[in-house]
Image (tube, rainbow, N blue to C red):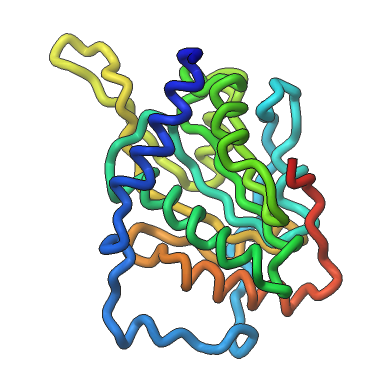
Length: 227
């Protein structure tokens, strides 16, 4: 088994194991969500343009994955082990995707996107392994990375995604990346309509808001192949 596949499987195992069901436990009062479409999600900001690499190593603009469908976009890195960080986003996407696959309102109209915070280690081959593990169905899950850290910096800044590289006593990078978990819900026209942090990211909440946007854009269809 190749090193990249080992990394891919380890990342998935860590994500699903660390983000246990208890991570989604919320106060019962908070859990009573309003009916989809009964409330408005106001535009927050435009999803910026940025040059990225897809899982095949092909240069692609971020807009190819933030237009034409309701999109949930999260930043992650494959070696993240903080249970309230990337693994929580991964588990949320995993659970939300299972339900969306059987929902006529979201099936074929919802797209999930993970963009790496660590392009040096998360090469296209690693992204390809991760994407292969999540392949299939009518709700595609796309994994993107960058050509270099410098090229990714403007995207992080535009999305308000601050990061800091962990360092040892000698000042050398440890491989850990400190970042606040953020997941962005983007409408088919490329507007960010909601931003979730650790305290508010749950499969039910994400799906409820995605349904609200799907009802607002009834003619939008998923523009990304399920692969």
